[in-house]
Image 1 (cartoon, protein in one colour):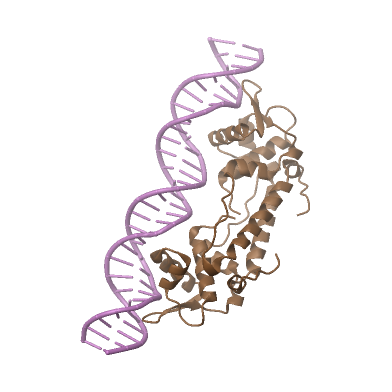
Image 2: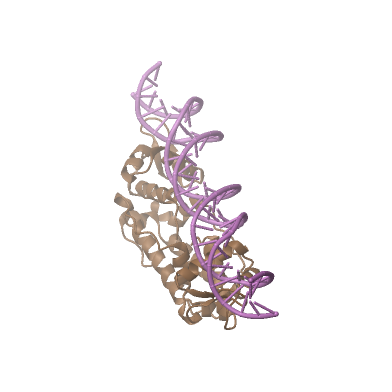
Amino acid sequence: MRLSARTQYALRAAVELAAAPPGPVPAERIATAQDIPRRFLDNILLQLRRAGLINSQRGPDGGYWLARPAEEISLADIVVVVEGVSQENERFPGVAGPLAGVWTALREFEQTTLTEITLAHIASGSLPPL
Amino acid sequence: MRLSARTQYALRAAVELAAAPPGPVPAERIATAQDIPRRFLDNILLQLRRAGLINSQRGPDGGYWLARPAEEISLADIVVVVEGVSQENERFPGVAGPLAGVWTALREFEQTTLTEITLAHIASGSLPPL
DNA sequence: TGCTTTTCCTACTAAATAAGTCGGCTTAGC
DNA sequence: GCTAAGCCGACTTATTTAGTAGGAAAAGCA
């Protein structure tokens, strides 16, 4: 389970939005709270908005907010957007063939887990039973 | 679960050794059977030998063989050697703190799975219940 | 001895990916 | 028209990945 810095930042930013009171949150505040390089964060938030996960508003008192309730956004939603969709299953020559099944099983568990956990879970600190 | 080509090759080479009849297997044969670039494979086998997972013999009829029975070498053994030991748990600022627990859970599952599956399982094609 | 087969070893390089930066434009509100 | 935001593509730099290169050393055999 290797996650790029970009993906980690995206998740942390999203959690920050989930935990904020209703209304726009400026990028600057997210950057400070989560210790994320400001310009890089801009970049990431843009991607999340284009994917329809968050909304934005410009101008004074502008900022970002979740496009859906935090209960309805899973970690997988964000990971998929930022990390891109996972690679197809490869085939392994000869006697190594059964390795494929192992990777499939691991990936499935990973995906199931990330799909079950929502931003609300993280923000509230109460994880569902794994 | 992102695995580098190097790690995949190492696993496939090890499985090939596990499936071979007793005695040294030359790198050339592994490279052909598993379609791995020859010089790169040399490099990887060297690393596995230094880690004590395989043994080698030079000269005509030389080659490589597993240092222990295939039942006693787990996929994790190989992954750890090639991929290096996993990074320490990071901490996440503020409200994103609980994310750490998710990564820990995922990593533990991954590690448990890879530890339970041995080269013998793969070579025989009979995976243990996951 | 010398030839062949095979491993051993360090170092190098090219390509891809990741991480972040820059400059400036656009929009909204006062 | 000033200020506080977001919007956007392009650019730069660092790291990692995936190999390659060149040869040295050992083992067996004739």
